[in-house]
Length: 322
Image (cartoon, rainbow, N blue to C red; front, side):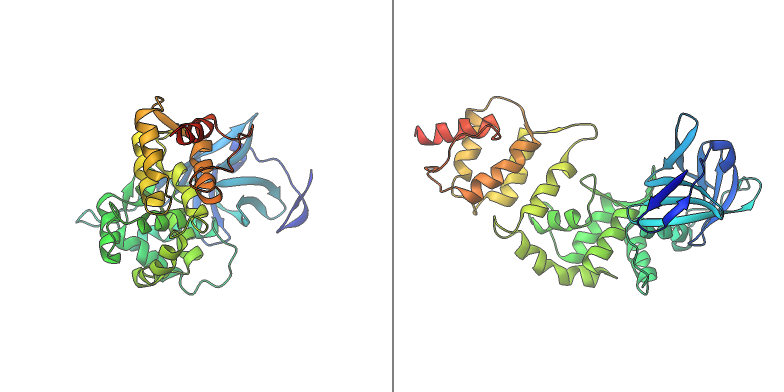
């Protein structure tokens, strides 16, 4: 089977099966990875499960299996690709290296291989002078999570304390996690941390502190906040949910719209007293920013369109009716 890839160009690709992957491999970033059954093993621990369809390996975690080539197995995450080459005939089954120091903290050395994978999934950049500093930055706030090291809970609070930011009242905290492209509010994975360091050119907490003024400026007006505002809805959702409870949506709207949109108090009153549904969907979340940004406060130029959420038609009618 001949395939084309934006990085690899044209090459002959063979199918990859679970039996073929059994054993120990070294990837092109130097990490040693074992495969046992459908488990991908890194640092003696199960890192991810293979995704299999019709007997063929599709990928694992964030990595897509491109196929077998003459020199090994190729994988892709985003625009980054890596090559696995076999280094043994059986997966790593010996004692798992300790992942924690005696005081329960994560040890920096134990994170290095996973950091290599996280970085590779976010960037094709060749210059990596700051990579070790960025890993140390992550390690400063990270703790063990069910799917790998994460920054959450006390670690996340310490980060905001070091930044001089109150996440309960300062909307710049939302801008920070949006730039890290966090999938879940209150948690930053290693891959998200690597992305944030690349996106904001960070190597330590001082660099992030220096970026705060720019982030504040970005969310200071209805015309510049769209990227951060749009990201918050997805982060705020509970796993598996597609709607946000109305009270939570109102709390987040307060961060973005209060003091910037003259109709915000009326919008809040409408939701609490008129709109009886308990939740807000993504369309409503996105379109209310357009309403606030593009229409006068008397809504005199507002006209109903098929693509407007019904809730906005109802709100406009309610405002105009006094």
